[in-house]
Image (cartoon, rainbow, N blue to C red; front, side, top):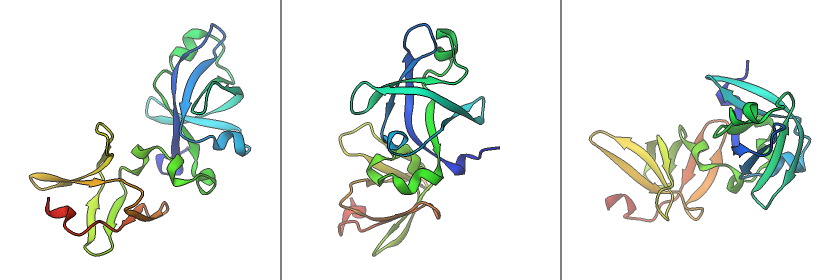
Amino acid sequence: MIQKSEVFPIGQINKPHGVNGEMSFSFTSDIFDREDVPFFVFEIEGILVPFFVDEYRFNGSTTGLLKLDGVTSEEQARSFYGLTIYLPKTFLEKVTDEEIELDYFAGFTLIDKEIGVLGIISEVDQTTENVLFVIPKPNDELLIPAGEEYIQKIDHDKKIIYVNLPEGLLDL
């Protein structure tokens, strides 16, 4: 059985396209086009399930149309609406950090170069122009900018993000 810790997100199913089971999707990484990726993984009723890819084609730089093995009707395709597309972490080393969906970092520990451990990221707030890592604290929360200029290193195996935050940022 596939565990959530063994996969990472690369996109999402948008909606059915036509009546033969094809569906539109958006993606943050085109690793499936650069490498031999035989299947995508979807979480269905709490279980991670692999589906072989019959075919896909690009609609733009971050969107495409997808046909999965065994999905042959519009009704079946509709059941995938909104599902996240995952790939096994064996492909993670071939993906740049910029291609990874930001929600993937929920659960990572954030460590500052000067201060040390800041806490565990509970969510990634993408509702404002500046993306923020949210770290819960008693009666409050830390909001840390997720800018590339602050991130020094990401250890995917240990689920740690090393940052170098500007002096005084946490005093705000």
